[in-house]
Image (cartoon, rainbow, N blue to C red; front, side, top):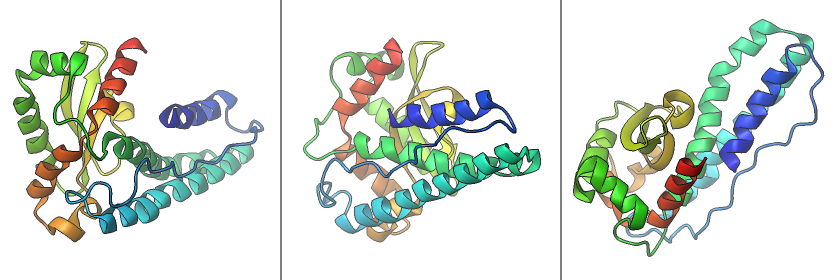
Length: 225
């Protein structure tokens, strides 16, 4: 729902057109965290969760709202140069908001150890086994140069699961067409306080708190949508 609202917000601006009056915009908000900061310990510390959520995600939300306010002003004035110049801020902060809103739901305490049902069958079909998926997604996530994300996505064109990576805060669906199911944040702020510069240890640990119920729901929604 959060991602849909964000996309509709962008689309509405395109439909309105440059120079046309804009309706009142609803500001984006930091979504509720569905568990306590310490709920993912020992795999992700409470300190990391608190800073990641209250500082980093909150900054993306705030900066997205600022960028959209500037966009509305530029559209009202018909300032095409200003509209174009805002694209990087909208992409970065909008992507950060979308990605983290998925990320918090993708994780959880006392989760099932492995996927079940339709998701399990799809993983076995497209990767051969759950272990193969873990190896492929982990390898891809660790190999991201600089900052970015590793993703398990659903390809609506082929009806199959795919592993993909995105740099910085580029959102998976808007930049690749894949529907995001499970994301691994490999920005250093997601793990450095606990794992220092050893990204592979963090990626290995995150599988212990993967919320397969949420990931399964995302697959079902992607297939029906």
